[in-house]
Length: 256
Image (tube, rainbow, N blue to C red; front, side, top):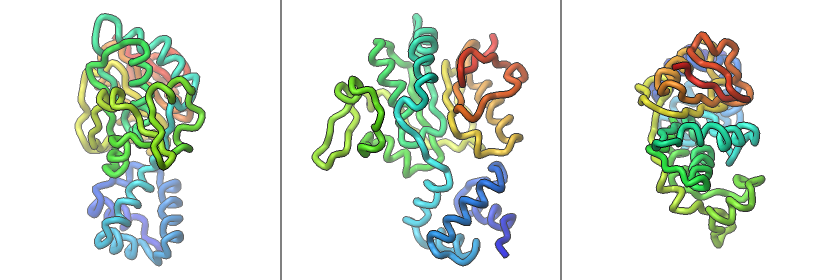
């Protein structure tokens, strides 16, 4: 029998990841799939492998933290960001923007391109993630052809260069705008005074109690009238209880 409670303790001790904050059924299924895929007989076998095999550990963390992202993901959301949010927060100042759970960097680079097109100058474009390996990929700014599928050709032509191996490298003018940093949403302190925070398709993996705690932390990190952007499956049912009001699809604004 696989003792999940013991695994939670062992994972926290070995990797510093608190599985109790995640939805158990969903996370247990993912871990069991990993065991089957790698022919590991038990949770103890997994922990032993994580302790001695660095490559296995890095791949497991990347798998566990569910790194999924794409450029300009969800057209409706990015249209509202481009047409409403960025002009609002960029008026007469340099906005501070945070992409939490940034994965491969596609989201924050999308924001950077929109700002470049509109001639807005950011005060800070911060991208954070728990997984250091995926942050390294984001910093490199090199993407497979499948990862830039569906991008507006004007952005591809202007801000990317195709490499000899067929991959695409994002322009230094965009890369240089972004600061990447490791951050654990469950444990680390939250920086303050952001004009916009995006945390999309991350909440759905956490328990409802953890979701409420994270939303509260994010709202505290926003300036008055700052914007909070979530994923399409993460609509906040009672935004006023967090000091928010819904202003567009997936976009909320902090009350003054």
